[in-house]
Image (cartoon, rainbow, N blue to C red; front, side):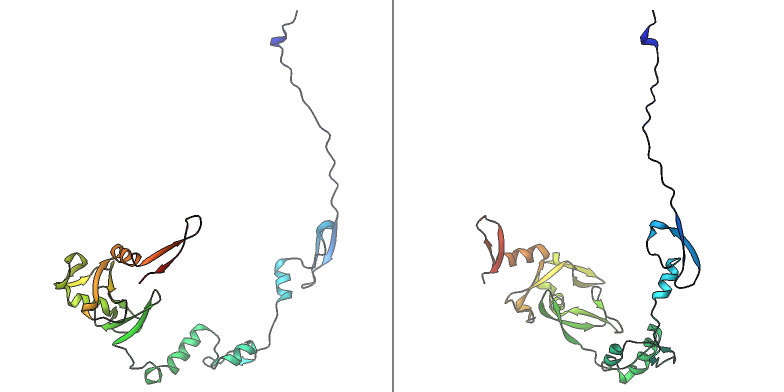
Length: 231
């Protein structure tokens, strides 16, 4: 007898496959360059031999209607833009050259108008900043000599001996507020920078102080809905 356990049987199962139909091609003429090209019959109504020809055919060529005031180059500009602009240039380089001519020296409306004390807005509140020759934490402004620094912080620094030294850092023998230290206005008037109205606080101390002045309004499920100031 034959031991069937030692007999190896290889089964090959084949399934009928559909024969692919040979795709037919059609010859067409490019609408832009006139070149003949072939595409499959299922391709659809192809009009162009390449994307470059399609883009070139659909490109709109405008007749120049304006001249650059700097280099004299002729260019097209939408009439609406011509109407709303006083001067017309062909590029950023020409615009920069024109501005350097039109707004140089006393022709600039801000010529000699450097403000020693001006307003600034931070988080929706109005403050004052002052112009200083230098400050390690001041903000440099474009085209300006020196820096601008918040006035309320400067007043605190000028009276540093009144407050805890943890709020300050000493640089070259002078005391400056640390960058992460806030200044709180006791009467809530952010433009009142009298020393009696100012105290330095860390960011967490400042946030905690303002949160104590708010009441949390909750909905029926006890979720925080909104806050309102109590005083």
